[in-house]
View 1 (cartoon, rainbow, N blue to C red):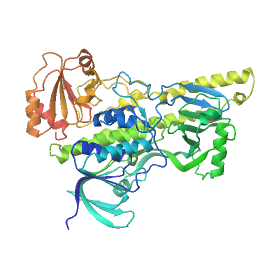
View 2 (tube, rainbow, N blue to C red):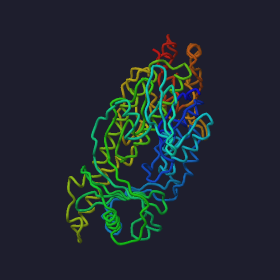
View 3 (cartoon, rainbow, N blue to C red):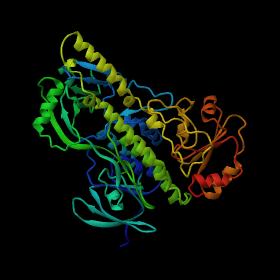
View 4 (cartoon, rainbow, N blue to C red):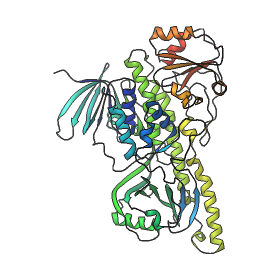
Length: 540
């Protein structure tokens, strides 16, 4: 019998692998996705779907699925720092409930609270829409061999132990921090392997809010005499909670009885709760030395491991998937050049380093009371104690805002120096964290502008290159259209007469890639339009 073949074999059906397979399916590209587990999520490793990820969900048509994923959208989303739930409240950052929050000016979407136990099923449903995408749970990658023209992989059925061989044009490892694919390539990780050892406990307690006197919140951070020692998160906005006992760099197994005492300490009194699962894990600051080879790539946690402080991990990984998917499509369909897939690492690794570093900074700020020491009088009674709590709370609140307000990280990444971007000679803008200013400078995300009721410029991008002609009497683009046709590059020309769009895009002609990043702009067609097309398709 002939060896089965798939254009793309994706290993790992977490959110990054599911997003990659779903985006390939949405593009009409056949692929196979394998996952060692059964698809069940017993410890949600993420709970915030970032604003850029939600823009991709808008493109894929699954925003309602995310909104209806299962999280209680009426639940308050404040972040609070306390000595205990029945102790003193030191500070609070107010946020609207999910059903009340509105998109910011710079996007048609907003971030969504959708923990992994809700988000993974949404993405799996997205994948299953496409009959040309095969999703196989209970299947492990045993080994693979990269050849000049294909990848030969051995996979195993976890329940029967039966092995089979499958050939793929390309293989992508989205298989987590201990990635079999990354290890098979011999790629090391750079950075700090251990920031803290932490133990997560998912427990059930219906009506927990009635057991204390604090206003409901999404996250509580607990500050004791030793500094920041634990956090509590409303994992479904109803009756399930994720308690995280934050250790240090020393590995230590925490007995269940100690975990129970810690949960009771966080409440400040005895109460009844049911432990559903316990997960010890390690916060890391690591980025892979390389993101792949000619035919084998890594994405998500396989490529970068980050502290969850800031919610960058999964969202960075889904950006990896979207960057890689259109490039795989281009090469498989024959219009992508030899440099197109090589640009994946050149574009995404600097973003991985940036986001992982920012997450570690957020962790250090959260844990800073351990280093700076907590004023002991803060835990006493009287005017001096109240003054100490007020001063501590104000300083901690101000410091933590960098983590809570980070649209610059989610939207402002730039593919500076990419070989498939044509620079326009303008200086690189500041890489901000808490603020984000839209720009159509090549390498940046194409700006959002409302064109009509419910129609964003972002809705134009995804399936092809889009050449925007802005303003009345826009210049001709026949050279571009001819060049794209000659190279069989999918190109759509869109005319926009809109004052705000003209102001933000700044040029009369702007070329946007299928992933939604600007790759060229000018006020007139270049003399060598074919050269521009060859550059952006990776064949210059």
